[in-house]
Amino acid sequence: MMHIDRHEKIFIIVSILLLVVFATTLGVMAFAHGYQVPEPEMVVDPRTVATPGFSPFAEPGLREVGPNEYEAYILAQTWAFLPREIRVPAGSTVTFYVTSKDVQHGFRLENTNVNMMVLPGHVAKLKATFDKPGTYNFVCHEYCGIGHQTMYGTLVVEP
Image 1: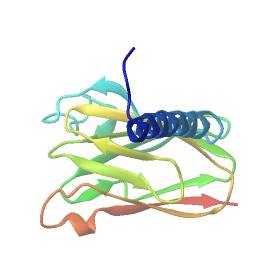
Image 2: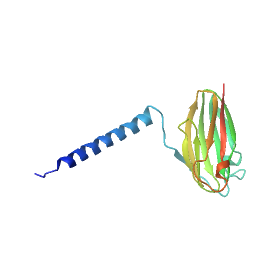
Image 3: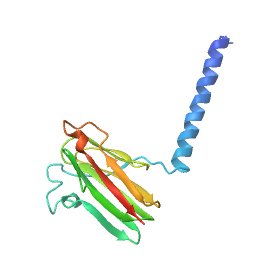
Image 4: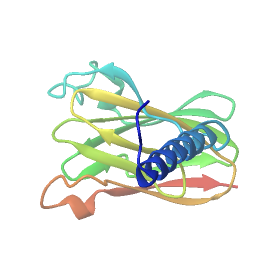
């Protein structure tokens, strides 16, 4: 039989307990609070992503797909988000499709669980429901060059 020192046993037990706590926290956040991982939706050519006729990002903006259901196509480029402002009524569900045509960017919608990396050639997708009227700012959270601080926009949820 192998001998394990008392301090090592304590360390092993604490480590296992921490793993259980972390796994439980992840499960609660994912299922009870609706946190989700951005899913790759499609691949686009970053050189032609803004060219009319090649993709929906040629005319970025909001599209209504059903009652209180919207799709927001957002194009990140040095150093701006297009469009800069989106307006939806309260109670709306918005599916965000975000891509970049130049460098790696980030997209974080404040006070929500929408937070994703934006890579050239890849379209990231996340869905959120907005029941509370107000202004939600979105910012680039990935340093993308000297004008990075100008990459922001707003989602306005109207009553």
